[in-house]
Image (cartoon, rainbow, N blue to C red; front, side, top):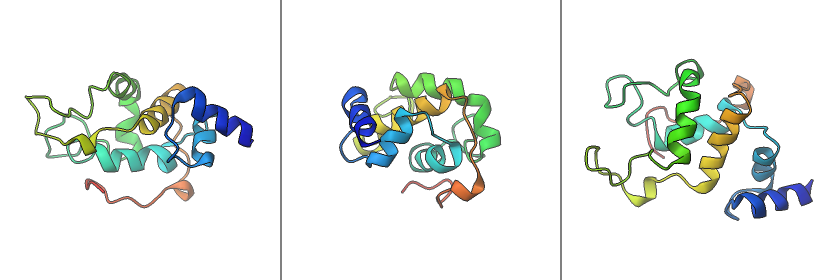
Length: 131
């Protein structure tokens, strides 16, 4: 198992700051919305992707996010979101960019069929607030 995790870090370019268990989960396609995706959305996306904000769709729940899974993959893989430095969006800082590990987590989630996971897996996140 450790060899798989180390190989995943080397092959995918995940940063060494990602835990070995997390890298192994990503490498083996065991990424769920509740455990892995929702914290990323809370940190980087929900500030705009919630009712009453600038983005046209909400990413607060699995039900509102799941229909957008393929689009999420496309825009994060191409680094179009979050729109750091884009002139027609609010100015975001370099710190608000997704890390390569976060991008790989989102892409793996979509590639694996965008599973929800269980509420038991969920990590507490402040909805609509950046960490």
